Length: 278
Image (cartoon, rainbow, N blue to C red):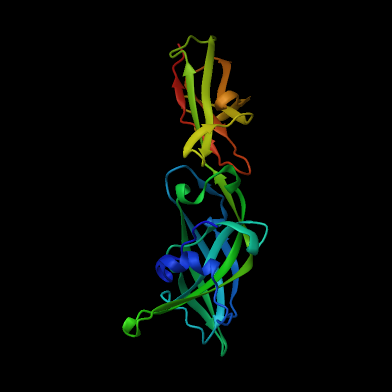
């Protein structure tokens, strides 16, 4: 099981230990998590080095007498991959305590609107291609009781942890990159232009980008003075993600490759390469 950080909300130790050594004596609180929205409903696209901050919003209903102080106890949403809660892998949780605002109360319950941020560092959380795909959502409640008074030559820390499966999913994708290079430049009108490029995507095993082969990529053209690109043809990426095709030069303008993405890989659009047609 990989490190899951609740961070300052509980303690550095609880982030890992509470998942492994739950307290048998602590009572399970009656918490309900709903209306979970991860990353504004968009796919989470992760590269090889940059930290991706994923916003999460949700509704939490808790007992009116339950105190969640963000220091000795906390509640929130995490993401995981796996068949079930007991067989989860690659847990992704917030480093800091969620921010919650009370929206309704009854004699027995408090309803809160909560937000949190899950910061994903690819080198810490993603190790192979299997980490991309559909992630599941869970609600968690963690608590810790610590006795650091060693006047009696004894200290102790007791952890407790509860987790609930929550409706909702989050799509995690590997980031992709594209390049475009049209030659020769300038070119005589009616002559052949060769447009090359490469489609690569994040390889979490090596922390580098590697070629993505066998993928359809659109070659697009935007004439000088036009507002939008139009697709000219579709090219399939070859060895190491290489792209190459030819077109007849007809007018000044920019060529670029554009990739629509897959269920495990994000979209990518190359910077346009302007060609002067003589």
